[in-house]
Length: 264
Image (cartoon, rainbow, N blue to C red):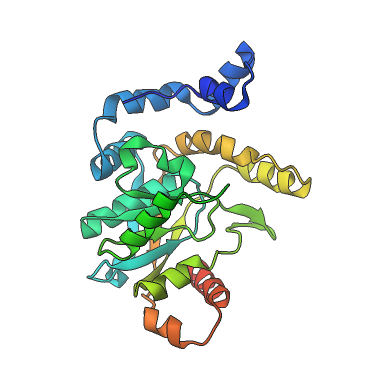
């Protein structure tokens, strides 16, 4: 498995040479050595096998709350809040795979570039136009039988109105559920990043800084989550027919389902 060298990646993208101290700082910030150790040790695995080893490496515990609400037929769209920005997606994908024997998870392009997980992850570009092949694969998987998971916020939770929560959910998952006749299962992932992460994002937004500083901290936040215990709360499935027949706009339905998730 090819290792990552973040300084080289940045230099290639910017066309500028990083000073030695800047390169070392960024390498430590993203835990480059530890990430490369994981890739060397488990990079020969793919999909769920890699997920199992990754979760074992982090030593995290994951538990369903109200697992009886999970439908026997996994051909649903599982939607969830996004408090951690990385490890929550890994845990959810693994738990759905354990339950149903297969899973596809909609993630941003950055996560999709984790080679061993490309068979499970469906890329959505949050920072530019969608590639045609990515759109076609997403449509094919939504039309298939595997469970599909999604973080409708598209971004990690932020400090908003005095509490940690997602930004408003995008309506696309509602349209996908209706188009591909998939019931929606609302989930809530219990977990938080460090206070430092949320304060940084809060002040970045407050001061109008466009550079997404929080994203740079997500690898560090993930490694700080070692040995933690997480709960995934399951809501009652929502029939796609009820969404279609409601007469409500997709964004209104998305807002309502977001509220259901946070009420669990």
